[in-house]
Image 1 (cartoon, rainbow, N blue to C red):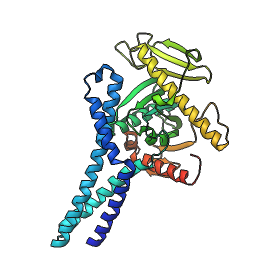
Image 2: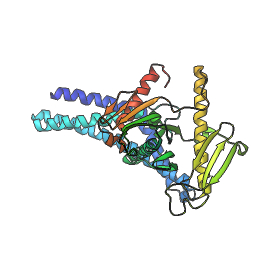
Image 3: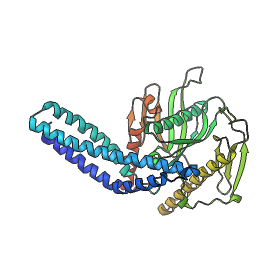
Image 4: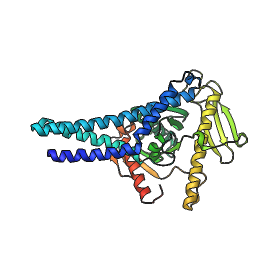
Length: 373
């Protein structure tokens, strides 16, 4: 490839990055950073631990976004300078360096471009993720636990803080259900494409005859409720039950009646939280999950009203959206986007970015085409 072609590629990357900077509004990010730094320096910040964690988490996120944009801009400028030197001195080695840097910049800018596609009403929110074992018995429960680890590893890879609110263990192995939060802006917009039915095909480790087993698990993704949402839940509309936590716990987690189950009487929605030692903490967490479910229900009803459709009040996990095949071959395939990989082990270890990015692009294309997602 010639120096002129490299120059054209850098020009295209510059145009894409400028568009990203405009959409993400770098000036607004810097203003948010200044405001958050001022809030973080308040002497009484940690008097309210929840508020303090919210401020520090948002500050960390904003700092990361600014650093990412500034780093890409710096790398792009350096690549231009290197190209000019390579061209002036006819340096083939420097030209190879430019080619390698263009490859790295292209990948990094494309990844950041995904953020510009998250423009839904709740996309900027933190996320609540609920996983439930479906059909398939003990294999489904084991699959649910595999999915929980997969998402927590994905968050860990990105440095996103998480909090597990509830894990309901199955009798033999795995989980009946689990609920956790990903506490970073845009977690909902990013992870919402993971909602649906996941399918696992493998030789069952629980079958002494070594037969192949197909099992299912459902993933639900909800936006975290904020103070502006006005989701009021009158006390007379809920029933609160307390019980003893089950499963691995140690250190008093499952020796006191600290677990909380809240039933929303008008809708029949049930949420549980058992991962804190304090009954009050579990109740507060369960109420946050209930508010998120009611907010999502309200969003679906409003969307259905606009589309002239009737919403199934019970909700559903949606259509099957991804298959994880471990036998007779190795493959993970998204049935909506057709994106696939032959390395399920990496996916189960949290290597999900390519699937998530493909899902976000697929959703945006359908929205632009006027289809219901």
